Length: 210
Ligand code: HEC
Image (cartoon, helix red, strand yellow):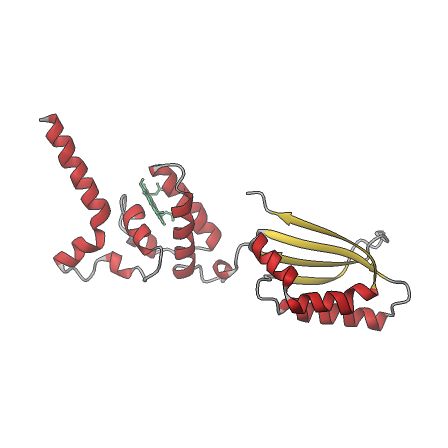
């Protein structure tokens, strides 16, 4: 008897986990909240994984930044099982895209890599030429598709005479940084404009650890 009860419970749970949209299609309930989920690769995951404890209206009524969705999704999925990173990443992308906070922070892609170059101009390079190098650099580097932000300017610490200027670019991934390194516009600017004017430089790339 116990055995049959357990099987019945399992079948019920499986049906529940799988059946969200199909079940609602059968009942023809047009106010089904699952219907509020826009199409996308994460939709099925949200229905089955997130909808297993509470209705999806709990989710679709919210607006959060990507970071906030990340917090919620990891918190929720940890309650079912650890190690659902792949599913979590897909769900976060989906929710951050479709249920973004209106402050616009959700659409800012996550920075994982920063590429920093500290440098000094050769002593004979004029102020005008320096301004040209910085302006053209900003223009060219902003045109590289994988770049998130570009900063080019003076180091604020005046006592630092070793390096008076800096360039900072940020990226989503190492692959994006690599694409930037190989971008023809970037290379041309480095070889024809930047390098001839530079006395010395040091490069530091940082990858976010979490
Ligand atoms: C194991 C059960 C369970 C699962 C699975 C689950 N939740 Fe929840 N969720 C809860 C409970 C319980 C609450 C009530 C508030 C609390 O405990 O944090 C909640 C509350 C929420 C809230 C409202 C509170 C807040 O933090 O904004 C959101 C949004 C939410 N869940 C989203 C999700 C998403 C997205 C998923 C799928 C990745 C998910 N939930 C999966 C149990 C679950």
